[in-house]
Length: 159
Image (cartoon, rainbow, N blue to C red):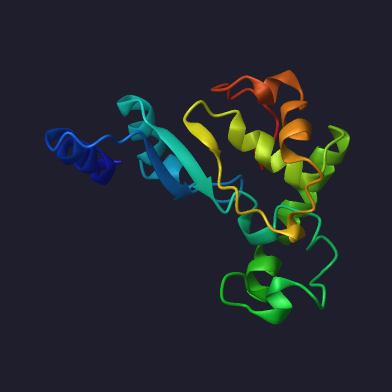
């Protein structure tokens, strides 16, 4: 939060437009809520583009039943490891149950969870085939109204 505010002040002094920040943020990684970045973005009237909105594929159906042989973890564990999958497994299974009850895939619900925040301009568009998200925009936007109303914290998707 403080670093964003300092950077925004410098850019204002230099008359450099600054309208959006990019940071990692998803239903499992909420660091921006704890470190003040999300609050600073709101206070300054900026937007947030999130990267890793599906947490390297954890927030998809890809790892619900273990680690597939053709997965990122099995091929290249630089960004997602077996330990990461094991650590998140109970949470993603629970979130998948909630998503199913809502008539959504886990990926669709995770994106809807992000888009309910008024500060979030959108998720990074670097979604891979492993996202298993049939149509993130239409299914996400057809989610229940409590997750579509931006800035509302009244949903039931918090783990």
